[in-house]
Image (cartoon, rainbow, N blue to C red; front, top):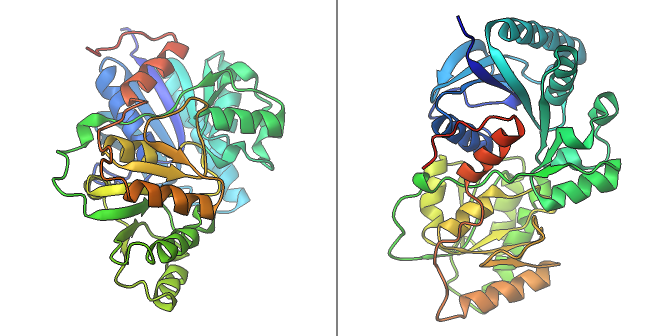
Length: 357
């Protein structure tokens, strides 16, 4: 009996079920589409930390095995690695594993790299964001070659090379799935929109400051922030102190589909993050027809309707110019599609049996 061609994906976390849209949204879109585009391929995801249960379950045709790491201490983490290793050994006996793909250069890449090397399998580590920054202790234990590394963006490739003197051989953005977008909204009644985790790195205090400045030019400006995190109370206090209660709405964490609906009502999507591998949320906003303004430039090539600022004052001027434009372009822009990312990834594993029309 022939064994099924299988790709094993190692990830810190993965959705607990098919309605869990908040867990690694770009990666789950990538995996879901990978299964759709390569239906003959068996995909198994090993989730190290989340969900917070030890289980095996099906997710959109993908087998997920979770190990309930729950980000616990070093001893527990070591035993968790042993459990993952033993599961990999079992899977290697049962399946024809074409390779291992690790999300982020962390514990998943460490186990994936070691197991692949011992068993003469292909392994790629997809560097997705902060794992490219200085101080990644996993790098010294993995010591990857250029050919084993995939960068999410040109920026990530350059950042990783700057910090570790190794240039990822491949750059593969995650891309967006047009199928998850509904019809365009008839009325764009949200002037400025932001979405993401409310953590210091994302700098949403600058978002509030920008709206505070723009209010003097646009007294009825309407801004919305979607997301949750430790900065929520700080932002609420800022909004109260600046008397912006009629201008900024904090929506909290919403399902992914609801965020996309808000994007379709948006004129300008503002991304104030101080560091970003490739904000897929920006790609989604572009496809939803919003103009995008950010501090980070993920790709070297220009992207239509995506504007870049160096500091807060620049961002204010760019947004002001956009909002004053009576002929604002709200056409959908799709520079990177997930189906292309799927194909590029599987070509690395030598697997070309796609069902993409």
